[in-house]
Length: 341
Length: 263
Image 1 (cartoon, rainbow over the protein chains, first blue to last red):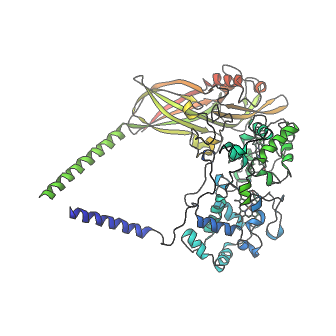
Image 2: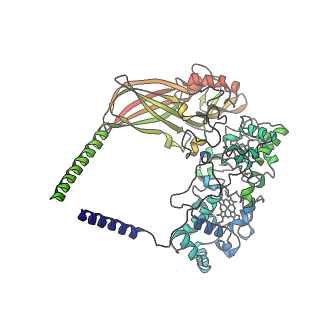
Image 3: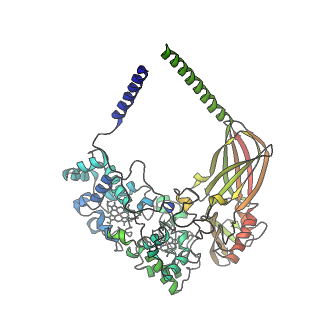
């Protein structure tokens, strides 16, 4: 019996030893990140890569880097220069200014709820958030910086310790910079609007007005037909569509896929916090939600890739009070608490 | 002495236990075969090709196909002894190009001799329960594509059964059609595909039986009733008359192209 116990102890020691050997350095002990709000699980698949789980330390470092001009050449720009934290990380300019004041050719996207996204960029240029971030920093028209410089600047500014806390290594690499920012962006979740409180959380103080109800019903009806692309929950669908902005559309998704059938298709924009992220569409062509509704109502252009969910006869022909109702509904998607953060 | 005896017995017990486990595993393995179902398509006598105006509807319109997504569920395999093997699962098929990964469904089945296959076009009751608030979906909520089949009238059910979309030409107009099937006004509206028979086929343990299904998309608009895109317009989700025609026509839309055994 004693022998058996001894043997057991030996085995135990052996395994605990090997365990010790393979574990990373002792100080690396990050705290798992908790979302500050409940995410109604049923409508929101989360996209978190296995090799980049959210940690408190990673999110904090990402937040710092996101607002830090150190990443750009001559310390000219930070992510927040265009992605304004007070505007759900969108921008109210049609086109923001990049390197040396050069105008961007697309409207700055809102960086909210990216944790629900599979593709990034209006044309779906990136299928991972980390990759999208790396490319922004390298982009000639945006940060224009090369990585060797970024890393030297970060080391000089004493970031080694922060990286060590977040990732268990003080060897700063482009991938770790992207990972930290990606963690921060994935932590930016906005699912606490009036709509959410009424629809998911059954909060009686968030009851819809008759106008908002009418708007929601139109949104969900086959007349308005918004829901087929702006799916209830995230209010986008992780897909690309040609919604008829132009009779001779830009390449859009075809830029990436080279397929003629993808011409004119762009990433469906999320409608969350839409009231405060004007102007609208990939080129910021509409200044107000009223202009957006006028477009969907009367100015939809036919081209051979126009989505079947769009009305091919010029639009869905809404009455003015119907447009008003849909806008009232869209306003219920503003998450005041998130914006105050 | 005592200790040795104990050791001897424990070793014996362990040996017996392991040999039992081993044969048990083996036995289970021995009986298991694999079913692979391939979901393919055609349009009358042509292959399915997207974004090409190469088809003609019986109602008189040239048409092209842009989107094809649908669910199947409640599969049943018919055995040679007239018993039925119920395969309690569902499958989502997205045939628009770049989504070929949904072409096959692979399941374990008992080895045996089979001669027929049936299923539901759409989702059976278990997979499409009415829900509200934060209640759980009937299907895993981790897949965007399932959630994209969102059906707004959730008192009837949660999902579209089918999104079959495209364009047709009527006179000078190029218009869109959307054959969106789903439960509406208390009608279930899924289609029960009756037994599609095939010759007695024996699948041995470890082997794979491959059933290639072919869904003829033209059937939905042609046989037995002519479905007129112009008459019903684009929005048919709550139009029971249109749903009824699709239901009736869809009943004969599937066939089995071949059944093969892969060793």
